[in-house]
Every structure is written in C-alpha cells, then in structure tokens.
Amino acid sequence: MKSKVNISLASMTWTALIGALAVLCLSAINWKQDGLLTGMRVDVIQFDGGDYFLTEEDVMSEVLAMTGPLENKRLNEIDPAVVEEALHYNPFIRHADVCVSSDRELLVTVRQRKPILRVFDRNGNTYYLDREGTRIPVSPHFTARVIVANGRIAAADFEHASEHAQLKALHELVCLIDQDLFLKSLIEQIHVDNNDQILLVPKVGDVKIQFGAHDRMAVKLDNLKIFYTQILPVKGWDQYESINLDYRGQIVCKKKQINT
Image (tube, rainbow, N blue to C red; front, side, top):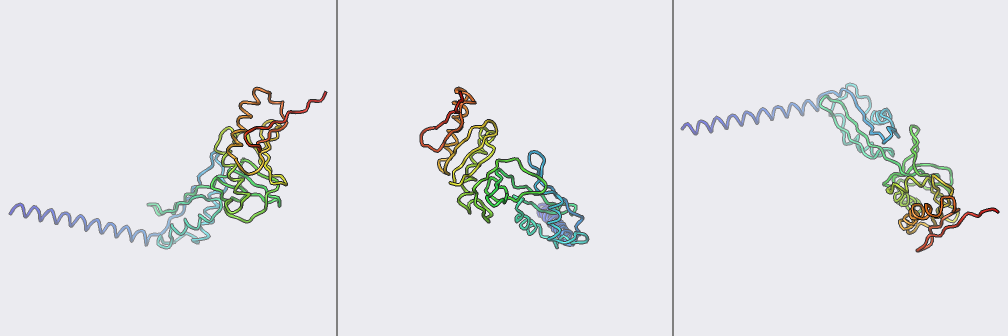
C-alpha cells in the first residue's frame, strides 16, 4: 500500500513539474509575441586590417528600410528570417545572422565578402571579385589592396564570374595566385592585351611576364616560380627583359640587350 502511495505522489510531482514547465513555455511565447523591441545592435565583421566595405550604420539603415521604425514595434511583427534573406541580396554581404536577444534587442551580425581581384574593364567600369567569383561593387568606405586586372576586358552585366568566359578565366587565375603566398607577394597586376593574351606585372623588378592564353594556368605559374626561385638567383636579377610561359615544356627567357 505504501508503495502505491509513493508512486502516486511521484506521479503527481512529475505532473506538477510538467505543468509548471508548460506554463513557463507559454509565458515565454506570449512574452516574445507581445513584448516590444528595445532596439537594434549591428556587428559587421571586419577585414584583417580592421576595414569595412559597409558600416554598421549602412546595415542598420537597410534593416530599418525593411522594418520601419523599431520604437513600439512588437516582437511578433519582425521575422528575423525574412530580414536575413533580404540582407543576403546586399552585394557586400556574404552572410547575415539575425535574431532577437533575451533583452528584446534585434541582433544583426554581418560577414562581408572579401575581394581578391579588382577589375577595370575596357569601358572604364570597375568592381571586385571575391574568392567565390561573386561581383562586389566599389565601396565609398574602403579601397581593397588586391591584384588589379585591366586592359581588353569586356564590359559585362553579371553577378558571378562563371557567367562570362573571360572573367571566369581571370578569376581562376587569381585564385591560383591568391592561394600561393609566394605568387601573391609577387604579382601586382594582370593585363589583357588586344589578342586576349595575359601579361603579369610583378611588384618588384621590370621583367615582363608573358603568361599567354587562358590555359595550363597551374603549370605556367609553377614555371614562373621556378624562374624566380631557381633561375634569377643564379643568373642575376638584372639579366632578363622578359619571360614567356606560353610554350609547352619550357621556359623561354629573353636577356636584356647590353649597349656597348
């Protein structure tokens, strides 16, 4: 008999606890639905140097343009998922996370797109490409110091480099350069001539690097590293006028002409 009483008391205790939890959950839901927002806090993740393509004020203005003033706005009038999706259309934003904090603040965290190439097309338009190949407009807040591509680059209306054959090739090339510390510290500019041939411009020295067509890119860059790490240190840094990487199976170097 005592055992049955204990079981009954335990059951009643658990029932009471479950009921209390249910009340708390309902209260929390009602609090979230009926409570008023207390404000908004925006965090834009910086680039390595502490720079921004867009500021916290830019993001805040964009959110307020969607939601309207937050004063006296109820929590159930704001859908964080909708705000997130809208922010992803901003060309500077790679990822956005939006939620409501325990003190009823709308929290917006933004990660920017990081450029690896700046393009100047033949019509004078300029923009960046990030590692994914997404087009990024120029920002009034910050100019990124990345490799520059110019020359006979077609003007194109696109969102991603994969939509345009020439830009796809340039993006592939700069990605190969960007992932190699030596090449990244060596190359300053990519120039496309009238025959759609590529000339690489180094940051140091006056050697003309004739890269050629958009093919065998990884092999050509490996040969370029051989030229700079194995040939120049032996033959002399001021001996060569140009290097041609467009030949298969060989590195063709042209010596400077010495005036006598």
